[in-house]
Length: 172
Picture 1 (tube, rainbow, N blue to C red):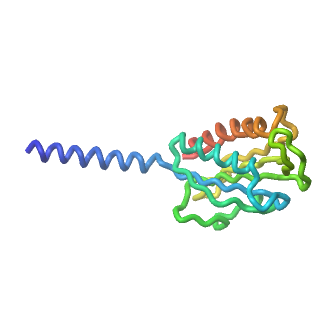
Picture 2: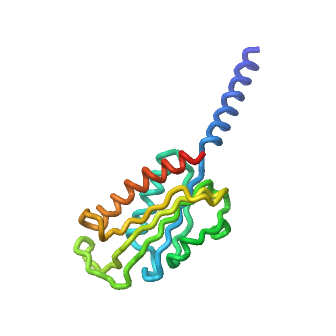
Picture 3: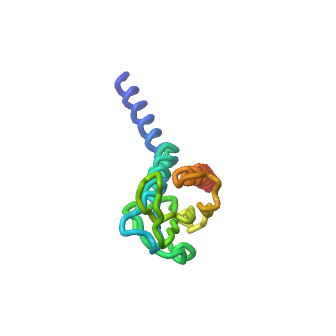
């Protein structure tokens, strides 16, 4: 009798735990898009932003995935269509980061090489099942007071992390 009660409690708690995790685990997918002025490989700034955002989503308890970066123009942003991206498992939310790079390289003292400067970062968060835009923001990096590209990116990340998480949590 004792074994039956223990087994029953185990099954109940296991089922409850799995259901609870399933109810609260939301899938967030990130897509990084660079304009056509960028180089063949993703820029350091693009990779930095994507990795940091994915870390934050993971730490917040989301299941995180991403698509390979793409090269498009800004019009691509304005006309989001649900079938624009193909996923094996449908995410609940899509975070699109669009990086606008200049066409001319500049010498970067910190990295000691010529790089394409990132002029702006545009972020859009979309609830996938309804295509509803939950959050939209653009940062023009050259207008930010911080010195150095990574300090500017960190500032953008601090805003994006807070606002994106709030938008997703508030959209249930």
